[in-house]
Amino acid sequence: MRIQKPNRKKGLTLIELMIVVIIIGVLAGLAITRYSRTVKEAKLREAALMLAYLWDIQYSYYLQHGSFIYEESDLGIAVFELDGGNSPFWNANKDLLSELGYSPPSAKSHFYYISWWWAGGIITWAYPKTSNSGWGFPDDEVDDGLMNIQLVVDNDRSIFVYGFGRMKRL
Image (cartoon, rainbow, N blue to C red; front, side, top):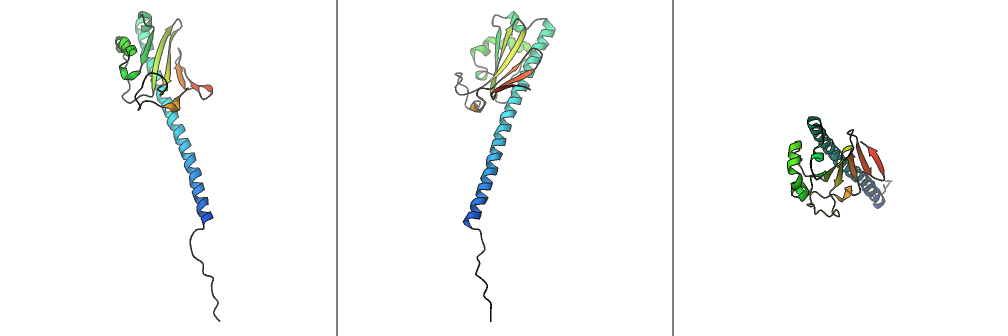
């Protein structure tokens, strides 16, 4: 007598397929979250490097002349990377900035930088270019994911990040 083997078809059941899809979805979600966080941190590091650069050129001017360049101007303020260099602030500061040796970054910047002179020295802030800032930035420079984040460099070249519900020193 011949024993009949059960007729089993090879393949995946619907439940096994759903489990695989869920696992892939969870892994993709984790990867996207990590990627977006890494991109945001890279943009913050770029802004921090720019702040350090601005501090260096301002301090270099101070060492050469004994005063900050903004003490000698009526403005008391300088704006960097605002409106692609076509803003009234940029045009008013163009000579001062060239005297500082400032050269704008070659890539698109997601931040603009403002330096204020006050009795204690120079303080420079980095603000993100967002769609609701009112400055009308080009779309390729706007990043609303950076909203409510600010960076500042103080007189001793310490850089701080404000945002994410806290202050953090870089």
